[in-house]
Each structure stands twice: as structure tokens, then as C-alpha cells.
Image (cartoon, rainbow, N blue to C red; front, side, top):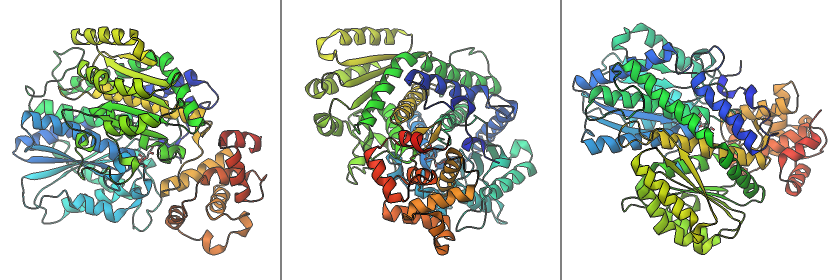
Amino acid sequence: MTSITEKVNELSVDLDKVNSLGILRLLRQCDSQIFSGYLDYQSIVDKEIEEEVILLVERIVEQLNQGFSINVVSTGAGTSGRLAFFISRSFNKILKEKGYENQVKFNYLIAGGDLCLTVGMEGAEDNIHQAVNDIKSQLNQENDKEIIVYIGITCGFSAPYVAAQLDFLLNENTKENAKKQHIISLMGFNPIELARKLKIEKWEYSFNDIVERLNKLKHQQESKSRNYFILNPIFGPEPLTGSTRMKSGSGTKILIELIFSLVLNHWKSNEFKLQLNGDHQQHSLKSKYYLILKNYEQTCRETYYNIEPLSKVIESVGNSLKKRSHLYYLAPESLGIVGFIDASETLPTFGARPLDVCGFLMNSSGEEGWSVMNNREGDLSSVSDQYKISQKDFTNRVLPNTTQDDTIVISIGSIQQLNQFKSEIVPSLIQHIKPNQSVNLIYFKQDNNDDKILDKEITELSNSNFTSNINFIKIQLSNSEIISGLPCFYEISLKWILNSLTTGGFVLAGKVYGNRMIDLGLTNNKLFYRSCGIINSIMKLNDEELARKYLICSVYSINSINDIPQEILELPVYRHIEYCEESKIKSIVPVALLLASGKFSSPSLIRDEICKQPIIRLLLDQHKPK
Ligand code: S6P
């Protein structure tokens, strides 16, 4: 049975048939399932999940109160690892400000290391060896009073990277001479029974085996002193099938911020006050749980109140991508990080070229580029242009070379950031942007006095001659911060917006068929099988094995499924992936799809055709079975 995160969402099957406004309306409906739930599965607002979260919160606080210090290790592959980084960075900041960094620290692990923070490289997800080394690096054997609170994030309940770490930690906890007990939790958005059952290559277990083991341990312990947790609200299938960066990514952010805001608030309520809209007299953890969710849900609704102006930006992104031009993001602090998390995901999802969508960070408090990131491996800008993420790179390298077909999206969330935009960015924009170029300033605001000044300043700026090219988009939200210093609501709102720009833009550029990706990278085991599923369903083959053969023909440039040598047919999946990586072959799924149409005699002919018509959707429309 297909897992929920890999299923087609009925609501968005016409994603490629509607205009930019329609795309936003479909995304709005799909995102609302984060809160309203999907079919009769347990949602984030149901008792099962609420109780599991509250037990976890209470367990962590109890350990803190008993004098343990905790190392919260959030970990995952791809978007899940990036969000682990993002959230750890935010919480460390506020803990440091309040002087609690010795009692609670946050660490992140991402498959493939920091190189994957800004660039999508999906292969690392299957690396068991790396996974174990990474988690070992987090154990503090010297200190019996430091425990790990492990948050293994795998939206699809499938990443070998997380499975291997869970296995390692479960072994640590169940060792006969274990000196301490780590708190181990798994986060993902499928029912347990839909965890991936395929045996993980080069390993002895499937993901499902590990979940079952965790689940068994969970049920063996008294709930109050339990060390094992499974956090799996169902958010429903993704609007773009399998694209877990979207709803599942948003859900990950919401759930982790919810858990640790409650932890900090429950532990030191005077230091970490909740800044929520709603009834502040409510004191139970349960009422706070629902109040936080209510604030996120409201943010989701308020974000989508702006679909009219945002639809224009999607159109312009679609045009930029069709013309093989670019989409550039620039923003300060965490809003900037939201930008390049979104940008990085366009490679594996849409087969984008590395610099099609790029994110940049505005300077902040005298820091620039990678110093703002606070990542473990430091400045990576010398690796390649993809890693040049500073404001200076944007103003000195990107802007002078920008063309009128490039779309620029700048986001800010305070009056200080507006002033910085005016003094440091506007002069370069005036010098370099072209007439009719799409330059957009998204600004977040609340309805308070400070923000009234922001509104006034923006109106003045938008009336000036210099900025007549800039399109100002106001996103008015009821709330910005969950705890002072954590602008979670602005961040998630921007995530929803940017996800819609890239998904919508690539849909308009012909990279999506129905609501399925058709030019994804073949870089890991999950994506290999997803590709087979896509070929099977779009070409109506009704035969998964046949779809696999077309995929193999595309990978090795073999003309017919009958010509595939037996030794290639029998290769394990990881060997096909290695081959794709070494040969740097492109358009693998599009070629397989068109080969399956029976209308082309060879992959090389199809590649010629794709050079003439790079909009795969149009090619497919001509050649797909009726
Ligand atoms: C998904 C994104 C991928 C996933 C990664 C981990 O849109 O492109 O990078 O995040 O494959 O998936 P999961 O299910 O383990 O969180």
C-alpha cells in the first residue's frame, strides 16, 4: 500500500491545468489539511498526538529538573535535515541570550553534512555508515548527567539515515550496562504500518523493522517515565506528489517548535513566556498546545489571504524559468535561511539547474553570509558559486548580471530590516534592475504601533520615483513570535509563500504533470522507486516492473526493454544510482516516460527532442496514451 506521503492528493490533481491563482487556491486547500487532518487518520489536533507531545515535553522537563543537561539532536536527510539545522539554530540563540546553553543545547545532523544545507544532494540519505558516525559524535560518554533527546525526522518514515541512528541509539539504551537513558523520538507523517517495508540496501533491516522495535519499547514502559516516542500526525498527501518539503516540512517545523516552546516554557515559565494571541489565562500544557496550534493555523489562513498579489509573482517566476532565467531570494536572518532552503529543493524536485533559484542572506549585526548561519562547518563559500550566499554576492555578483527576465524576491519583517534594505540594497537595485523586471518586496507586519511606522515608511518608499519598479506585498499576520526571539510565524508564512513560488513557477514552466514531478533526480533509493511509480501511472502501464525497465533503458541509453542485458537488470538499485551520478546523465525520467510511449526508437532521439522542446509537459501531452 502506498504511504500517505507518497500518495496523490485528490485536491490538487489539476495542478498543471490551472493558472497561478488556481495553483495558490489548490495549495491553500492542501495546506489546510495540516490542521484539519486527512480522512479519518489522527491529525495534529487529535488526542493521540497531543498526548504523545505532552508526555514527551513532561519527560524532558522532568529530566532537566533532575539535574540532567540535555543535548537535543534533531536529524534527517534533505529538507528534514535542513529544518533540523534551522530550528536548532533558532533555539540555541534564545538559550544563549538567557544563559541556559549549558543545560540545554541543540545540535543538528544532516545526511551529507553542511554541504547539503544549501544544496540539494539526495544521495546521502542512504548512507548508513555516515549516519552512525554522525550520531556517535553526539554521545558524551564522559558525562553521565548529559543525555540526548533524539528527534529523528523522516517525513515518509523511510530514510535509512534516520533508521540507522535509531537502531544505534536503541542499542545504546538497551545495553545491559547502560549508564543513562536517552530520550528517543521518531517524527514522520505516516501511520506506523505504512513505514517503508523494503529492506534497506547494504543493511539488514527495513525502516518498518526499526519503527516496530521502537513501538514495542514504547509500549513496554510506563507512560510517565517513557523514553520512546513516535510523533506521527497525518497531514495528508503532498500537493505535488511526494514533495515532502511542502506540507510535511511545514508540519516538521510546527511540531518541533511546538514541542520545544512548551519544554522551555514549562521548565522556566518566567524566562520563556509564550507570546501568543488568545486566552493567556490558560495554564495547562494541553491548553497551551492548542493555543500554539491555533496561532499557526491563523498564520496559514492569513498568508493565503494574499493570493492575488502572490499569483503575479508566480507568473513572473514561471516566465523566468521558462526562459531559463533565474529566481533570486534575499532576506535577513532566519527569513534568509528559509529562502535558500526553498531554493535548494528545486534541484531534486524539478531537475532545476544549480543556479536557477538561489537564496542570499542580508548582513546582520555586523555578520555576513555563512557567519549568519552559525553552522557547524563554517564558511563554505569557496566550494562553488552555489555556496556564495552573502549580501555582497547578491549586490556585487548577481545584480550587475541580472536580466529583465530574472525575478527577485526580497523579504523583511521589521523596521530595522526595512532601513537596511533602503540603505544597503536599494542603491544597487536602482543601478542594476531593468525596466519591467519583476522585483518584489514582501514585508511582514503585525497590527501594533511599531509596525504602523513600518507601514508608513513602506508607503513613502513605494511613492518615491526610485522604487517605482518594486512591487510591495504586505503580509499582515496576527502574530510573529512564539517565544520572544523566535519569529516562527513570519518564518512559516514565508515558507508557505516561497514553496508556492517555486512549485507554481516550475508548474508553469512545464516541470509537473498533473500533480506529479516529471524531472526529478534519480539520486537515492526512494527517488528510484518514486520514478518507477511516476512512469507506471502517467504512461498507464499498470506494471511496475515494466516501468522499472523503461527507467533502466533511460539510465543506460538502451533502445528497447528487450535489449537490457540480464546483468544490468539484476543490479541492485544503488548501482543504478551510482551510475547516474558518475555519468551525470540528465532528464532520466522524461526520457523513460517518452520511451514508454512507444513513439520513439531510442533514448538519444528523445534527448534531441528534449533539446528542441524542453517543456516536458508539452512533449508528454503529444505522446502520452489517451
Ligand atoms: C522532499 C525533499 C527531500 C526530502 C528527503 C528526506 O521534498 O526534496 O530532500 O526532504 O528525501 O525525506 P524524509 O521523508 O526522510 O523526510
